[in-house]
Image 1 (cartoon, rainbow, N blue to C red):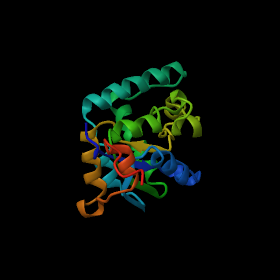
Image 2 (image 1 turned 30 degrees about the horizontal axis):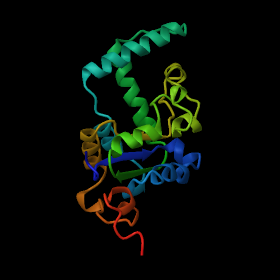
Image 3 (image 1 turned 30 degrees about the vertical axis):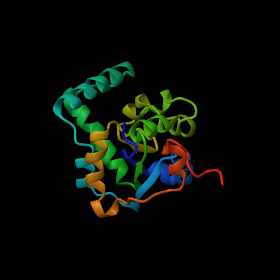
Length: 198
């Protein structure tokens, strides 16, 4: 258990364009997680490829799914599966370059899993009601595959603590990550709640 676990989040261009910045931050903040870094900027292609770096097995597996979806939609599938998999990352990189993004680091107990729960499933169509993706977008993998574009799911969040660490190192320097105390941490983490009553 790590009360100081950190996780990485990006508000993607669609979240920015739809003016959901405050709503997204509010939903993360009201859990008790602490914002320890945030910056808004235009992402560069090199950093995005580093961020979305995948291996050939991933490209092939995703590409095979794309081939199935294309055939089911009556579309041709004239490339090797691995190329369709690479097209997924190409589309995401292209999408992330279309406008400014906000990168953030959040800290708290089980931060990675808490943020994943709030953000929802990667595919908005299957995200639960009450999640960011479930409440604010109706996109799907099928539609994005047919249109040969990235799924518009508002937010990126890390899947695992090791991934969060890798991603934070891509987007932030060590001196951009703040360590500070919030008053609410006492109510969240102090075992005895000493000092509440006068």
